[in-house]
Amino acid sequence: MKRVLITGAAGFLGSHLCDRFVKEGCHVIAMDNLITGDMKNIEHLMPLENFEFQHHDVSNHIHVPGDLDYILHFASPASPIDYLKIPIQTLKVGSLGVHNCLGLAKAKGARMLIASTSEIYGDPLVHPQTEEYWGNVNPVGPRGVYDEAKRFQEAMTMAYHTYHGVETRIARIFNTYGPRMRLNDGRVLPAFIGQALRGEDLTVFGDGSQTRSFCYVGDLVEGLFRLLKSDYAQPVNIGNPDEISISDFAEEIISLTGTDQKVIYKDLPVDDPKQRQPDITKAKGILDWQPTVSRAEGLKITYEYFKSLTEEELHKKDHKSFDSYIK
Ligand code: UDP
Picture (tube, rainbow, N blue to C red):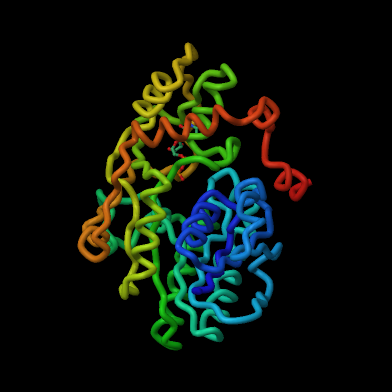
């Protein structure tokens, strides 16, 4: 039985990865400090023999008894609101956290996959973004703490690969959505659906002409799984190239939810990327992977999830453990 450590396991992506690796018959060691993660996302796995949870901050030394075959480093705040609120922790988990994980991978002879991001391209001047593009990042802007931490994380991972011979994989993850996203993390999809469900107007930032390309979480997990199993150590974009403007996206959410609310316009956040679309030629060629779930299908599933939340969850301003953390 393969043994897998997943950091950020109680988060949106981490919890879906836990499901996948449990289903693959692996023994999963799930680690999370629960700053932005939520035990609710993995509570269904807790009774299983091949699943264990460690409440731990990966920015501190990690101790895992026994063998490890794979490490998936998915611990990090991942929404602009989160990393504005907790910038230092964001920098630490992308730097100290990845260093600890890589040290562990080296000690155990484990293969490690890191969650990098389209944010390493910053506000991109090349469109769509290929892995060869080096990006346009403002290191001292509000997004710098996340973008630079992730860029450092890639550099550190590559150094462990070339210098120590650790088997590493780098996934550059583009905007992803699906069940278990936090309703109030500020990201556009939960923001719009939450507003529709609460009967509030939908807030489009800027004039809404900025674009994003949204990937359903099931597709993303399949891409990550294939990348881990591949022998390719260079970065690979994983995302859905189906690009849409944020104002058109708001209209899609209005027709999906049937809300009679309108769109209101607010200021565009500083350094908000104007366009984003992955070039997935590499993923197609190397991993034989491409998304299969259309936005219409994925949004329907995701809307059903948000509709199943309780009134209390719907009106909660933010995640409980997160609120208590920032005092
Ligand atoms: N956005 C918006 N209204 C919201 C939340 C976000 O118009 O209530 C915009 C945001 O300015 C950005 C896009 O939606 O242009 C995607 O934002 P998100 O925070 O989801 O992700 P990221 O900017 O990191 O891609």
